[in-house]
Amino acid sequence: MAVPEAFESVVDHFFRHEYGRVTSFLSHRFGTTHLEQIEDAVQEALYKAMKAWAYGGLPDSPTAWIVKTAQNNLMDQVRRQQNFEAKHADEWVRMNETVMEAEDLDEELTDDTLRMMFACCHPSIRQDYQVLLTLKILCGLNNREVARALLKKEDTIAKGYTRARQQLREGNIELTVPLGAGLGERLDQVLKVLYLLFNEGYTASEGSDLVRLDLCAEAIRLSELILERPLLRKPQVHGLMALMLFQVSRFPARQDEEGRLLTLEEQDRSLWDQRLIRQAHNHLQTASAFGQVNDYILQAAMAGVHATAPDFESTNWQALLGIYDAQLRLNPNPVIRLNRVVVVQKVHGSAAALRELDILSEIPTLQDYYLLYAIRAEAFKELGIGDAAREDLQTALKLTRNDRERAYLEEKLLTL
Image (tube, rainbow, N blue to C red; front, side):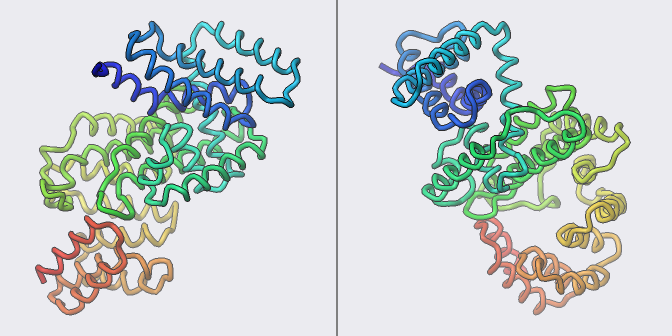
């Protein structure tokens, strides 16, 4: 008997999106000390759904069905524990019944997902573990999918997640959205993890994929979840959303049919998603209306300059240079200085760009960064210094681990 397409779609939706909501919901009520049991209970509930719904059809409220089944599974696990006192089991039964009396289950699930998001991104947890917890709990990815996304071995992910879950459990971290003075710092930490998640999807650091759309989509979905709550509608959230939407709008044009990386100059701008660009502009305007400047807003403003140019030649490079200067005042980061050189070359010429690059090449953190050499090669090429350009491109090739970027650099090398 073939499984109906609608059934497959709903089950996939639960595995991807509802898994995190239900896990967060149960963790808020029964505590993160039982997170491993809760995850097992939710996974078992989803497996039961796969079997029951395939033959009996979908229930009126699939989410409530999953929650109730997962809670029953959890209760069965608790009762089987030999060292669990009867009075505690009775208390859990009472809590179980109370949970199901909630009138607005969907709103509770959303609130609990936000609480879990802040818990996963707690500053006491290692940052790489924060990313792991976010991908596993909130995005519902299994070890194999996380390993593929982060280009690590599956057993490395499994061991790392065990340690990450241990930090969450032993840290006695409450599932709560902080209020008052602590909100800004904690929200910034959450956004930092989402930004890292998006960037790993937008420019894959290794492998044959140029982008990983699933990671970008999850970062946007979780950011949208934050914006559902008025208390969390801060300028930095709108700024990050604007940046991500501007970047995603160009996805259809970033590669040709053979998978070759296309630069902004080469991209067919008619393929850019204008709906996403409009949404990005709206978020950027909302963020700017707060009268506060942050790194996400400035990065989004740069992306907006590119999005509004009808063609590459019409790009407002002077405006971009001004935004880069503002960003450096806020965050004097060597990578930002390096990216700024590309604009310096457009505004002031290749000789000026090389002078900047001579200074940047002395910074240790940039000396193993392939883009330093790729950008300098372009400046040498413009000045007709082919041998130096060729040498820098060869160095860049040795340093990059992304196959698509390697192919792009090899193509540039052939044109010299």
